[in-house]
Image 1 (cartoon, helix red, strand yellow):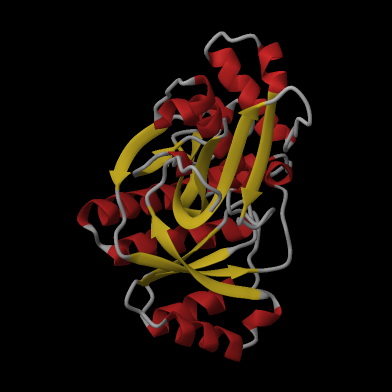
Image 2 (cartoon, one colour):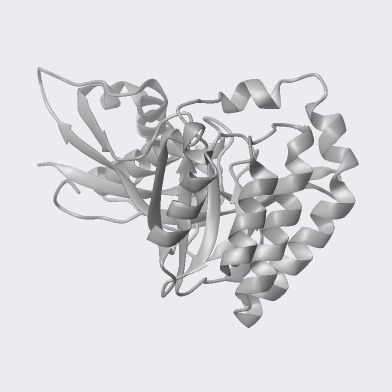
Length: 294
C-alpha cells in the first residue's frame, strides 16, 4: 500500500535574523508543493533524495524501530518547488517524507515535533507549523505562534541564479553581520507580530521590507530598492526576500491586479534578472495527507 505526505513551499521569510543571541525566522507557506510517496517493497526499491532518506530513518529512530527495517521502503518525490532559490524545496521534501512515513507506520507527531525532527537533518523553517510563527531554524523550536495570514498573495520574482543555504551560513562574517542587524530585526519582528495579530497587512509589509534591506549586507538582491519603490507606488503591502536564497516576494492583496504589477517590473528591465515572475497564494503551513500526486 502507498502512503503520501504533502508539504508546501515558502517564498522566503517575512523576517529573519538574530534576536537575543539566537537566530529566528518567520517564513510563510505558498501553494506550491512537494509530495512524497512511500511503500514497502521487496525489490525495485527507489531510494529517493538523500535528505529525505535520512528523514525516513529519523522517524524510525524516533519510534525505536530498527533503522534496518527502513531499507525496504521505496520513496518517490514529486515537487513543483524551484530548487536552490530559498523556497524550502529540500525542507518540503523532508516534511512530506516524514508525513508519509508516519502514515506508513501508523504513528503521529505534532507539527512542532516534526519541526524538531527535521532540524536534525538540516536547518529548517516554519512551514511545518500551521500558524505563522517565530521559529528557531537550527533546533526547530517555536518561540511564539503569531497567527494566520488571510487574503494575501505574493508575486514571486525568481532569478535563474541559485544559492546554497549552508554555504551562506558558513561564510566567515555571517554571524557577525547578523548580530549587527539585531536591533532592526527586533523592530521587524515587533511589527510583524502586531501586523499578524491585528490583520494589518501594511505592518507585515513594513516588517518584511526592514528585514529585506538589513539582509542586503549578507546577500544582496539585485534591484531590491527599485522593486520596493515600484511595489510601494503600486499599492503593494511590502517586499520580502529569501534571506538565504535568491527569490524576492511582493506582498499584495488578493484583489490586486498582479499582471499589471508584473508588467511595471518588466518595463524597467527587472525581468533581465528575475526571469520568472508569477503569483502564488499565501496559505497556512502544515503537512497534508492526500492519496494522489498533486
